[in-house]
Image 1 (cartoon, rainbow, N blue to C red):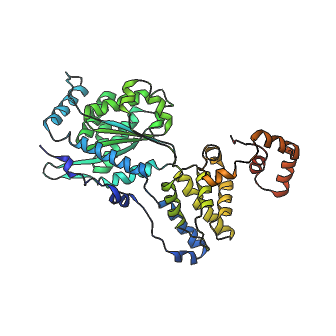
Image 2 (cartoon, rainbow, N blue to C red):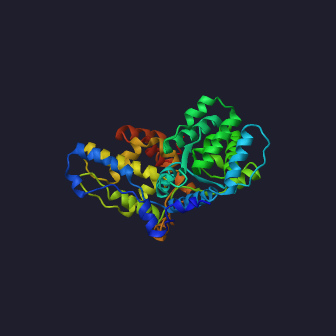
Image 3 (cartoon, rainbow, N blue to C red):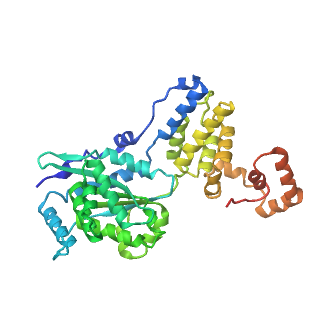
Length: 408
């Protein structure tokens, strides 16, 4: 009996895992002496920065464990019985199921927290294609596909076959298309291919199943696929799919996994900000102080993707306008002029925690009712509009000085 699981790289933990997941592009402070055009070209390197978080560590261990469990199902007598049973089922013959030991889980998180990047780098740590010379057998430890936008079962099955062909250099897709198979036969063929060549199947953008009537059918097809093949299934998506998976107990049981929200105000977010601030391409170096850190957390909503976009656009603005400084002025311009679509998703919902000193300073502020009455007497809407026209600034900011504003 072949031990396919032994071909996986060793499981990493602790500092070794953090170092392996970290991605830091080359950087030298001398870059600030280059011309503006050269610095603008080098500025895109900030998008290549990846600082692993607790989420990355947990996703890696989940993926490694699921892949190892799947590989342990291959190369034994039950594996051969499963292939024969699948062949009988796809051709309408007498079928007897085989216990598979398959497992499935989910990684649910809001958009922008780095799920796809985390998954990509975790897959790299599991190694490339496993080539077993003795049996002329090749296995892809993790096969990554995306849920079709229309939740098409055939679309996903064809995508799986194409991904396997790309990884192994096979021509399964051409063979399947020539055969003109029906849906049951296509599923049977994909089950056989996955059982032979796939460790864990990862389906990204699984929230697409929520908005389509065919979504439930696609999910049941995936469950049948993993039950038939014995491979593991990992579903990646946003919180929109939580209600869908909670509909019935059997769906909820199969989709138990990891769930994440935006980053919290703490050490991990500060470490990410410090790393981003170490990559400065403006002429004047700026330090990351507490006020800038609080501003970045508030205006990024705790999302790494928004933070990277803010730091990149602020430096671009500073270089193009000649200010050459990554300070609050450049950050504010970048936020107001280039990230307006994200305003309603950041400021209204997330605020940094205040220290004890800050809370004491605000104890003697007037109550909201007293403050609103006072403002109503001293400033009117006409005054705010006139001030906006004179300054040419941000209208929303002027309105926020008068009362609470939520952008929609």
